[in-house]
Amino acid sequence: MLKRASASLFTFAILALVLISFARPNQAGDRIMLAGSTTVLPIVEAASEIYNSEHPGERVLVQGGGSSAGIEAGVTGAANIGMSSRDLKPGEKKLGLTDIPVAVDAIAVIVNNKNSVEKLTKDQVRKVYSGEITNWKELGGLDEEIILVNRDEASGTREAFAKKIMKNSSFAKGAVIQPGSGQVRSIVSTTPGGIGYISLGYVTKDVKAIALDGVEPTVESIAAKRYGLMRTLHFLVKGEQKASVKSFIEFMLSDRVQREIVSKEFLPIKVVTGKS
Amino acid sequence: MSARILRKVFLFCALTAVVSVVLIFIFVAVKGAPIFATAGFTRLFFSMNWDPLKGNFGMLPFIVGSFIVTLGALVLGAPLAIGTAIFLSEIAHDRIKRFIRPSVELLAGIPSVIYGFFGIILLVPLSRMLFGGSGFGLATAWIVLAIMILPTIAAISEDAISAVPPVYRMGSLALGATRWQTIKRVVIPTAMPGIVNAVVLGMGRAIGETMAVLMVLGNAPSVPKSVASPASTLTSAIALDMSYASGVHQTALFAMGLILLAVSMVLITVVRVWSGRVGR
Image 1 (cartoon, helix red, strand yellow):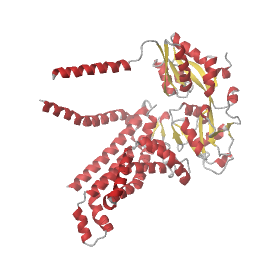
Image 2 (cartoon, chains in turn yellow, purple):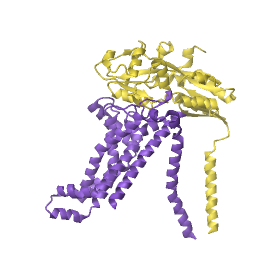
Image 3 (cartoon, helix red, strand yellow):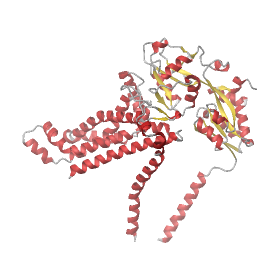
């Protein structure tokens, strides 16, 4: 009886050991941790796959969590690099973070394909989202109610939109709120009176991107800095980092990654800043 | 010796539930309580202004939303469910029963995220066609929830109706009452406590449902103006904000959880008191 009990205890201990050894992170090799914005996440993941295969001794680990979480992780050192799709707020600028822009994104205001409205001014968009304008006929469209689609408060896209368009106005409370750009696009594509805003990388044929102040959101208009609703995607690092982290940042900014990965979703940073 | 150990083991199993309930209550209360001191009762419960990033935590839109959504689901779902129960226990032949009962039971086992899909794919376009708007809103949530609570109410009501002694029915029929008169005047009044119990439990499920509601209700932090308007409930608001909330905002979410807990406790108490009184 006792023997059997001790035998099963022994088996249990072995099992536990095996589990623990699985759970423990691989200490061998140099780890580079990134965390934050889910907008930036896809390009970093794609770049990290190439980087990992070319640098066998190093390991790039990427996780989401949102821009605010990314900035926080950069400050506390929970990640070597924080990713953010919004600029630092005044309070956050004092925390000793180095801001490294990695790409430029445009936010497109989208409407249903059946909508006859082709362009709006920033002021009109603000009035639509604050609830002052509620019918498309006030904007030169058909007599149809405007269905507002908004993002949740954790969204960096919402943050950027609020800053660039809403200024001091508040969002209308009656808007449909969705937790992702894909859902916003899906609702606008099926709702005749719908309006939403999403990252340019998410725009497809299912919806119509509106010209803002007369400028259509295209790679060309962003490059020329003519489109009025742009934002920079950032890497944020604190203090002096180890060589592997610097090397990954360099890799991210290299012509190859910017051309092969970044330009598929966003605008490469060099086109905008003119740096070489 | 082994009997004593077994006793301990089973006692431990039973205590798990008690400890969990107590721990949940304590943690939610401790985490949620500070906001009552900082924001004040009135600014929490009687304010329409929910703007957490600016420090406004008016929860009234969510409380009203939960109430309207649950009420609508009950109005649609309860008659449907009770009708199903009456059909199954009083009217249906065995062959039809064998077909319908498993369907109702299957409905109870479908995960709520699937109900959400069903809502988005089928009911959202339907609601958009019938009532206008985006389709994400009250009407859609009502229908989804009505279907979700149907199996709960139907199963418990059927038990209650089946428990009515056959002699009651025979007596009624022998007095010359028709089948319908018997159901209406004898069977349903006798089974009433069980049916009420079923409806209250269905209500509990509707109030607590999160995922399906989050997917189809539109999540606007405002009191809906029409059946097509988007709205939020306590549960959907907590689920949407929990991923990023910190500080006072997080405390506010715990306070909303506390309200939910209190409401479900009241519901359970009502059921216990009611069924205890009638059973005596």
